Image 1 (cartoon, rainbow, N blue to C red):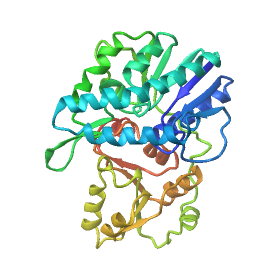
Image 2: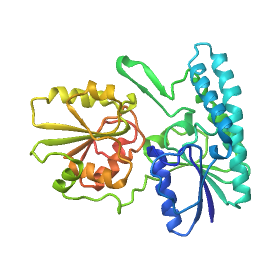
Image 3: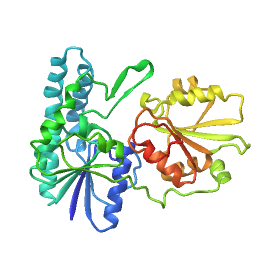
Image 4: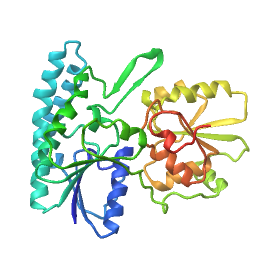
Length: 350
């Protein structure tokens, strides 16, 4: 069986990593898989399966044009005048989406693929394009966030009770859009890694199966804490080490404010806070009590960080099924997480 996988990113975020791990597992079991993506990133190591970057096929001018379209749409989508936001989605994004859909259709036909498996594609395709492709090929769509259900990734309350969507938009009519296109679709099956996200799927839409993320046990396993701390440059001083980890520690959804509050409350206790992930100099200066370890791009570095810590914290305001929580548990380090989204599927309340 030949399966064409489609993802925004080659690697570089949690959804892309989960997709990559699935493809590796399928390839190891003898299935023929290939990946199409638009944004490179992450580990540069060659994969065990073919990969194709759509953006690299278009040339420098096309890349620049698409980036300008996206930046302009980001601004217009926040307009308080709904028709302007809707015009932006229709006129700026639709041509880009259609171009990507044609490239995927061409690859699927030329490669003789039996099915297409979509992952995170909100920056790559619209629901309309996926519905059209589903009339030619069986589609599996992994719900790494709420986009397949609602047209946005996440919606959650921040400080003060204000509601925020990721990506920020006032185009909340998109909540109804997926249901409309699903009624016109061919064969589509949705896959959710968490029970919470499965419940977000549209009523009377495609069937939803809950299949948790798989994490390679050969990459994540316990190692001696002293060895891990030495490799990470963390002193073995008997103090409790708390690990906060995210791709971008600054993102409001990751709720680093909780970690900051804990640092203030425990500043006189023998507790050290370790932070792994992207953070600029301004963010680092704002949290002088934390030890920033940079961004980990390899499984070895992640394994060392988890094993060096006494506990990993996942305080997200909303999240699907964080790879970080699963990886930490495989490395023998307990996890404290917020009771939000799919986190309770990993961390038992109490």
